[in-house]
Image (cartoon, rainbow over all chains, first blue to last red; front, top):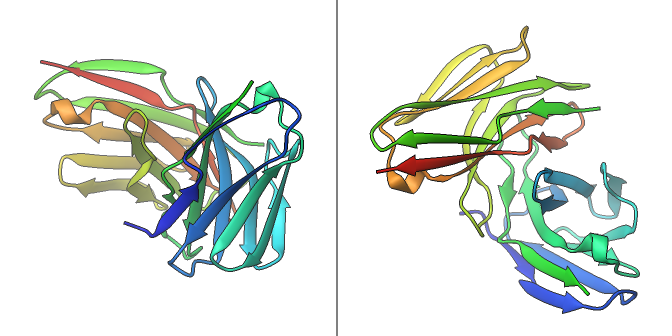
Length: 113
Length: 109
């Protein structure tokens, strides 16, 4: 299994509070991703990174920001959490080579009350 | 944009075969992936197709037709542990992976 961890694994917070989720990898892969998963929508890309300090938006980036200051860590921040951001968040990594799979972390279940 | 369609649910009997179809219309194509996801767990990689044809891996096979924007995942000799969601995903030309909503397969005894 790819070495990917996410923290925290579960979090309950209140509307309007800031929240930061962390993804940590030990594979030295260049590409890292944040997805959210909601019933009926599948996995949707929030932001991704193609190197240290290099990030770009995905299809559902509003209300989220990311940072990557070193290869192994990719942080997702909700500046002011809303109830619509209640979801399961998955981090994924890939080498980016042809045929290389995307490997997912265990997920973070976030509830915004 | 990306449009990836797959059926919502399928039910089959233990020992049978099930075929999960996936159609896609995407702005770029650099491979199609299938993932398995058990309830409450992370998706796990099953298969990858980038050229037309059939790829076989044990009880699982995946087929791709790029001209038709079509793929299927074939699960043979179904076991109870195969009850899960199966996700079709397309990689574009910019190292992004887009997913369909997933197909929940229920295997009955």
